[in-house]
Length: 244
Image 1: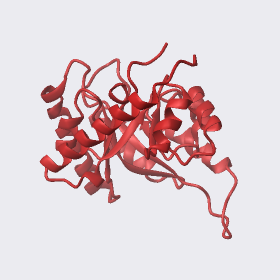
Image 2: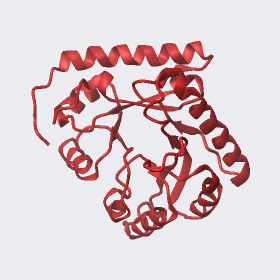
Image 3: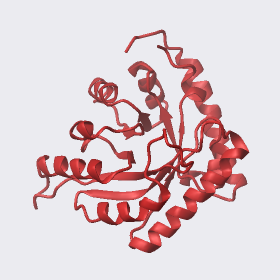
C-alpha cells in the first residue's frame, strides 16, 4: 500500500460532519443515535489516517482486503480498535481472518462458514475453563439478485442460517446487504426495507437474536438508517478519495 500525505485536520472535520449526519438521520427516524454504529471504511488508506481518527474517538474500522487489514492490525496493535471485515472473503482466506475481527460481515456460503469454524477450533483456548473463542459474523444477502455480486440469495438464506447457527464457534448477529450500485438514495430504500424484513423473519425462524443490519454507504446511509441499519459503512465521505 502506497503511503501518502495525510491531512488529519481535514479527516477529522469530515468525520465530525458525518457523525452529526448519522445522528440527525437516526433522530429524524425516531431512533436513538447510539443504536447506529458508524464504521469508518479505511481500505486503501494508510494506517496513519486510522490512527488519527481512532485517537479522535472512532473505534469501528472496516477493511475489504485480508492482507491489507492484517498489516494494519499489526501496525496499530497498540490502539483500541474494533476491526470489521466487510469485503468478499475467499474460502482459502478464512484461516487468516478467524478470530482477528470483531465482526465479519460477508459470510455467504456454507463452505466458507465450515472453514471458518474449523480454523476457530484450532485457535488456543482461553480462560480458566478452557473456553474457546467465538467469531461473530453477519450473513451477506444478495438483496439485488445480481449475478455478479456476492451474497446468498434470499431463497437460500434460511437454510444457510440454520446450518451455520449450529456451528459452536460462529455466532450469527444479523445480516449485511448492498443494493445495486445504480440505486442511489431513495432508490436504495426498498432493498434496505426487504433486508430488514428478511432479518425479522430469520430471527423468528431460527430463534436466535439478530440485532444487526449492516447496510448503507456514503450515497444512501440516511435511507439505510431510516430502514433500521445498525451499522453504516462510510469511507470516502470521511477519508476522502482513496489513494492508488
